[in-house]
Length: 101
Image (cartoon, rainbow, N blue to C red; front, side, top):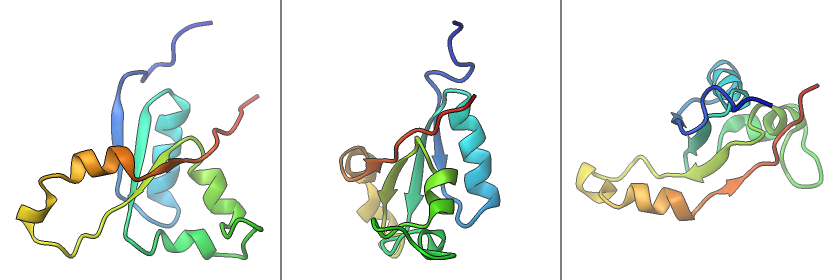
């Protein structure tokens, strides 16, 4: 088996709803480490179209599978974001990867 094409590449996914997260999902499927950055309330897609017992919509889980999801409050001043990189490494959770094939 060959190595994933984008292994070792980290991608920040700052998008919401469907088109951007779908593009990020394609990069994750190719081996990139995709970090989805969401506002404190989360991506609105989390609740779109009904939710499962875990509070997330099936579409949200599918399109963000395998990504690390972190929440970042973008209403803070630029000087307040100095430690954001470290905070992002510790405050998120990884959604289970989807299996292709």
